[in-house]
Image 1 (cartoon, rainbow, N blue to C red):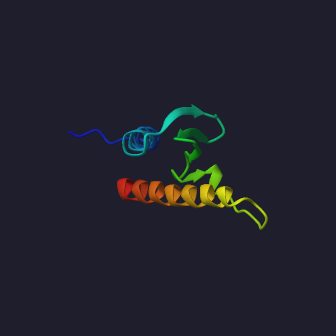
Image 2: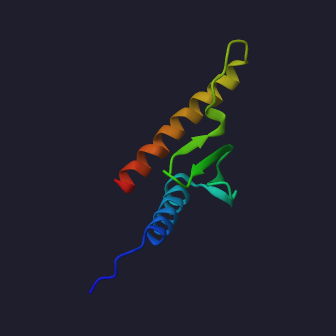
Image 3: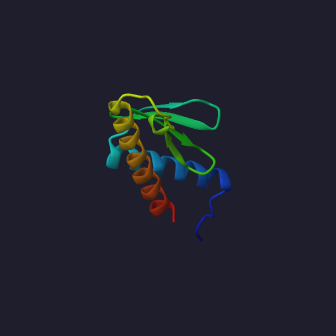
Length: 96
């Protein structure tokens, strides 16, 4: 008879699987359990934020920028937005 996982066990397994995806596919490092419902991590020079509740990832550098910033800042933001989109797409595919 197959054992059915509790919600807590399922969430732990999903968390482990998502972190492994981030490490193996995106080279994520420096995972830190912030204890506030999310993990922080790095992908290269970008800082990520992984929500425990829905496994949504936000890249800090993907924030909105108004006018007047150097082009380099816009380029960093654009790259962060692309990375954030790729990561969230892969997590959605993984967890279905």
